[in-house]
Length: 273
Figure (cartoon, helix red, strand yellow):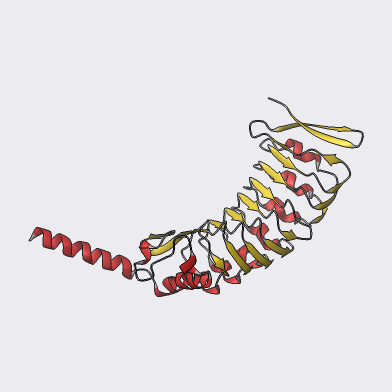
């Protein structure tokens, strides 16, 4: 009798948990599956099984909070329905074969903390609506085919710690409003087609550890204020149109301490404290 009661309770709890996955969320997941050739994924979903059993999907209280499908052979485009995953905090589709434009509905994911769509084939502009994701801490869009300028709306994401946009076809300048990203630790736009001068406002980012600007068309000189950033350990500004040619340096154990200019070559040395 006790066993029967326990089984009944477990069954009711299970049914209740499944029932809490909203129809709109499940339909959004199915739309993702169908638009990215789900049957050909490395680990496909069994659409007849419960959502909680689907590979790479994490639920909390019946709500979809994480999607981790990196290295899973997703091939296709992202559907607009993805914006219906209102409780999503982590969205990682890195190292796949996705293409097309990033859907504007990504801007509806207000709970998003990590958005990682790197190493795909996305095209078009970075949606300005991403600036509505005020909880975002990580934005990784590198190694795609994105074009246009960096939306100024991204400079309102004051919780950002990583903004990695390298290896695309971005143009324009680094927004001077970048100084609003006071928590930023890693910033990369290397290997793009950006121009203009490196804004001095970057020197106000006291937590900056990595600054990757190489292989663009930046002009002028490197702001001397970078030398005062005590946490900065990686600086890459080579292959630009700067007044001097700089060596790229990276040493996570030591901050950049000294700046020397010798004839036509500028060298940044790392010294032990």
